[in-house]
Amino acid sequence: MNSNRKIMQLTRNWVTAFVDPRRVIGIMNLPRYLVDWRRYNRLAGIQKLNWQDSFPSLTDWTSLTPFDAHYFYQAAWIARRLTCTKPLWHVDIGSSVMMIGVTSAIAPTTFVDYRPFRAQLAGLQSLAGDLMTLPFADDSVPSLSCLHVIEHVGLGRYGDKLNPQGSYEAGCELARILGRGGRLFLSTPVGRERVQFNAHRVFAPETVVAMFKDLELVDYALVDDQGRFRDHQYPISMHSFNGEYGCGMFEFVKK
Image (cartoon, rainbow, N blue to C red):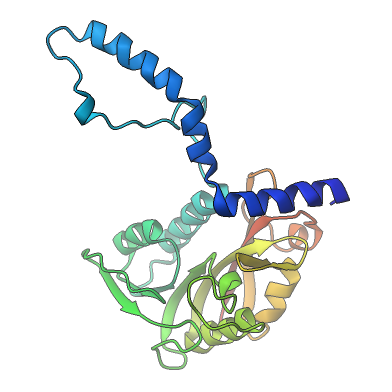
């Protein structure tokens, strides 16, 4: 990344910490909202609009449906993997709660998060827990996922303790509880290695593999910098990806 791009990215990172881009877009779209209000009221006949009931949604005038490529594709990836492996019990550590609602329809799911999750749903059990000290015995979990989580551990973003080795210690804890023959589905940002304090870390794919040296990598998928999903990329693309901020999805087995 050249110096100008680095400066632009750094500026964007700091500006978005204080200014929500969606709100800025919303303000820009306010004139269109007011014009549409007047047009609708002329068409409404006796069912006139009441200003006290207004609820402006100002950021949805887009030509395409927006989505976060990392979170969309990793949810599709884990759903397809669990549909194939059909575990009798699945445990997830800290992944997107929107995804957990789907996995619990595929297999009974225990969801563990640093911040307690209070939803009630058939097939879903929620526990409060710390990824550094998970409430499971050694070799006890047959199917395990942790998607877009370990890159945050130890940076204090969610109130956790500061720990430069947080991601690596979290990886050891995931490997500890995974049962023999069990599968770990893990995703994390991949690309140029760095710590973007206090948002996340970015790892080279081979660093993630080395982090789980006692497990066998059996498959790998990738969302690249352009948001394109590439499934079943192991082993060639794993070592050739040189992007800035992709999403690597790793499927490990504990022999």
